[in-house]
Length: 387
Image: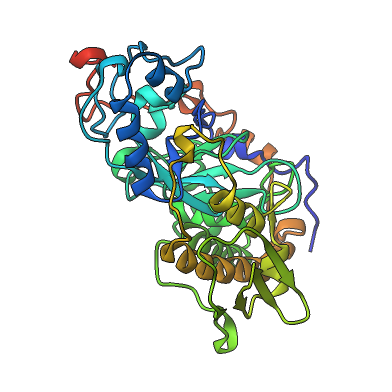
């Protein structure tokens, strides 16, 4: 089959033209692995007064207790200045805090230095966020159904409007590929192909070969399913299933891997079988299982809101860990399947062809957020926000 060089393949930035910088929190305590701790932190903040409240808040140049900001789209957080805020904690929401690590966030604009409201406006059950994972070993892109907080890569939502409306794709791209392939190309199909074929330089080889396209889409859809983790619980082949062989301590402090026994050791606790591919799996140059574990046991600075956390290891974390082990093993297995479509393609579709067809260059409006006015958003101090 003829090869496709990097120069021939269009960049991801042209295929999914609208991108947003990741949110910047400015402080760590509004996020955490369990929602109950976040509510306790909020209570501690609102019960404190004067300088104590300010110290607990951890002000930055972008956010202080006196910052006037509007409500996050789709959320119920208050808009009065935090210096005099009272009342219950806004209900925490799930976010992707690190690669393959879903945690919780207090969705209050006053707590977040740069919340990227345009992302919140399109975050719903239909959305898929594609995240550039940065340099280093591991997946080039991550996909998630929840709002990602990962830095430093750009975030590319699959849809520009709520309800799965207006795909964030180069105008005319789906129609062009549909014509070349002889079958409909839906947004999730194209996203699946992107996940299967994207290169480290963020170019995406395309093909007009129907058989190769179908194989790549099938592989990418499995990767998408594993990354989103919003369907049936995945299982390792051959009936293998990781489970707790020796009880985990109430607060494990260390994690290690016994490669010969295929066992994950959390102090004296033991989980097996854990395939080597799970332990070795990296994203952004960091071993995922170690990072995930560290986020739940790292000692915070005493006296800070982050120090309010569970006194013991949570049962829910064990369940999440067992599933994560399986997901990483299956992703490592799937990564070997996408190599042929990523590096050698029959009937390549080049960037030059897309330019000749008028698909490229992408018009400037496609790189900007859509105007989303489906609901009122409350501005600072309860005023109606004009957007």
